[in-house]
Length: 419
Image (cartoon, rainbow, N blue to C red; front, side, top):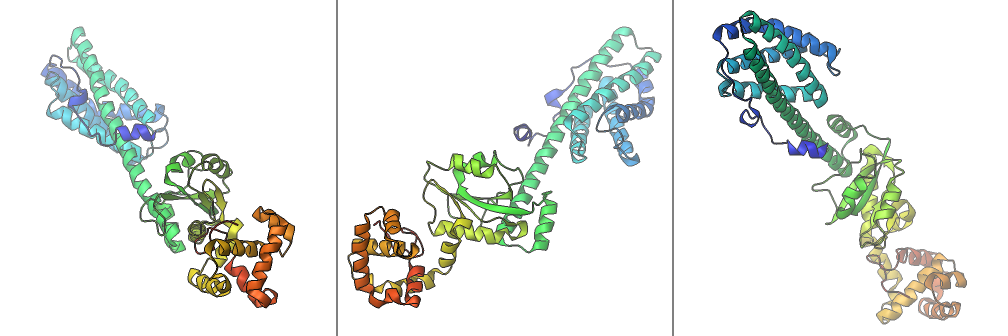
C-alpha cells in the first residue's frame, strides 16, 4: 500500500489526462430538460449510494448527505455543460475534475476506502444515467443520440472517478507523511526523556497506542529495514538529532514483549562487524532511562562485533562505568604498581588478576577463563603478589582492585591486550 500511495503522492487533478471523447452536442432543449431534473436525480443517486454501497450505509448524517448531494449536482451540471458543448472538456471539465479530486480527498479523510468510493461512482452513474436519459427521451432525443449520450456519460464518470482516486490516494499519502512526522517526534521525545503528560499527548496526536513497556534497540542502520519488517508495526524509530546516538547506528523502540525481536536480531547480526544492544524493558514513558543504559553499554565496548548484547546481562559493568572520570582515577591509583612494567607484561598480569578476583582465587577456573595452564596462573599470581604485597589481603584494596578491573579487557578505559 505504501508503494501505491507514493506513486500518486504528488498527483493533482488533471482534466486533460482522462477527458471524455468528443461527441456531437446535444440539442439545447434536451440539455434544458435534463438540467431541470438534476436535483431530483442527485437525490436518487445519493439515496442509492447510501442504501447499496458498504462504507456509506448508515455512516452519513444529514449534513454529509447534503454535501454528497451537492457534489453529485455539480458533477451532473458539469456533465450537461460538456454534453451541450459537444464534448469539449475545457472549463466545465476542469472544474468538475477539481471537484472530484477534492471529493476523493474528503472521502479519505472520512475513513472510506477507495473501493467504496469507486462503488459509489458506479451506483451514482447507473442512477444518474437512468434519470437523465428518461428526461432526454421525453425531450425528443433519438436512439442514436441516446447511445452517444450514454457513451459520454460513462466516459465522463471514468474521468471523475480517476480524479477522485487520485485525490483519495493523495490524501492518504499526506496523512501518512503527517503521521510519520508525528511518530518520529514521539520517538524523539521518548529517548530525550520528555515529561509523561507531553508524551501521552504526542502519542494521541500520532494515533499510536502505547504498549505497557518498550525496549530500546541499538543496531547498525543497514539492518533497520530488515528488522522492522519482522517485528511489531508499533515500533518507533527516532530518525533525526537523536541524543547521544553514534554515526551509523539507529535506535528502535520496540513494544515488549515482542517474541520476534530476538530471532530477528540473532539471524541478522551475527557475521557482521556491527553489534546490537538491547536496553532493559521499562514502562513506555520511561524508556529514556533504558536508552541511556543501552548507549552506555555500546560506548563501553561491552559487546563484541557480530553479537547481540542485552544490557540486563551487564548491569554490574554499567554501574562501574557510570562515572568514567572517577573510574579512571581509581584505576590509576589501584594499578599504580603495574605502571612501570612493559605494556605487554602489565596487560598479562592485570588480566590474570582480574580473572583471579572474579573467580575468587580458584586456579583451575582462572586458567580456563584465560585459556592457559594452571601453572601459568600460579607463576603470574606470584608476580602480582610481589607487586601488590599485603594489598591482596586488605578488603578495601581488594574492592578497589575489583572495581578497577571490572570492565572486560578491551573496553574503553580498561587494560587492553590479551593474556
